[in-house]
Amino acid sequence: MSYIQGYDPQTLREIVDVHECRERLAELGDQRSLPALLERVWLLKVTGDLDEALVVSEQSVRVARMGGPRKDLLRARVLHATVLQLRGAYAAATQELTTCAEEAEGQGWAALAAFASQHRGKVFYDAGDFVNARADFKRALFLRQEAGAPEDELESTLLAIEAAERRRSGAPIAS
Image (spheres, rainbow, N blue to C red):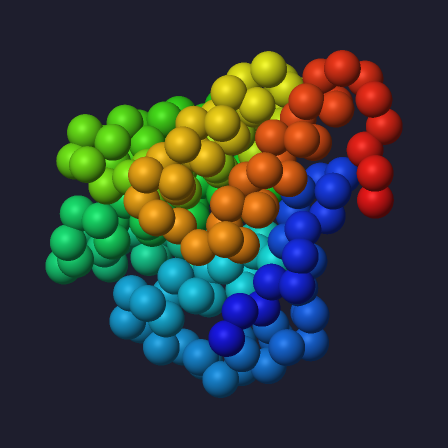
């Protein structure tokens, strides 16, 4: 089940039903498997509990580093970087996402490279660097197309490209 109902055209953040997300968090409880940890990080992030999201994201990186495949570690690191972004640590988030995107592309993992590029674009967007945000969103679109991503992922990337272009040109963003 996808908890994402859309994306805010101003902030590019996921629009979710917070009540449903909190219910799912309760269902997950204190599960320690990597998939459960990653889901908890995302749910905590979108419900605004950034302190706990940071703690759980750091735990997910440690768990992935100790026993998971390299792809899982990159996913955990990308998610950790998104929490850093929302906490305003743009430089740290950008550095982590750059490393993840480069490694994923080097391994030929287009979908994962797109995931990291899309999120690095969001960091640039939040920081007001719309030129680099647009470049990252375009890279993510190319990689997602290469990976055969579903239509909703392509749509969210197109929305992000349009938002960055409008912000760069000073045009208002439609709601």
